[in-house]
Image (tube, rainbow, N blue to C red; front, side, top):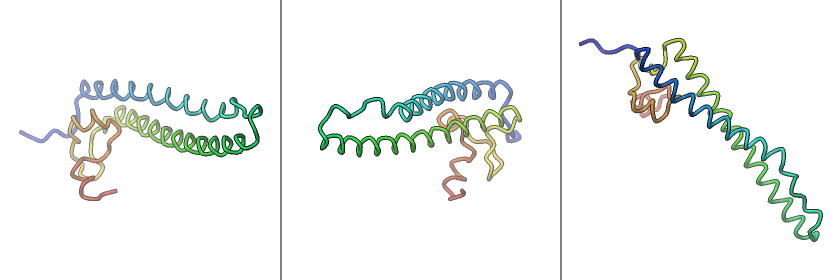
Length: 126
């Protein structure tokens, strides 16, 4: 029996549904992070003593930096999911970009934006 070269349309639809679910959640999380960044100054420290104000401003700055990093990471994840949807439309989804072989369905269900098989990833391919 010849080795399967790509996933069937039905299988691609299953992966598309998984990706769309993850994308919906990821977009929601991203919007929350953005709201956190823009509303950071909503809890003002004007009514606290000067010592607490300095401490709270420092903590707020660190929180804002962390929220910014999380938002950037979330946006990168969203972009990877969107790229996976493009690969589904092109019917190239699930093909390892290094080996050219199909990435196992179990891996794609766990990491739907994967572009490398475990073997290629383990071989240190970047």
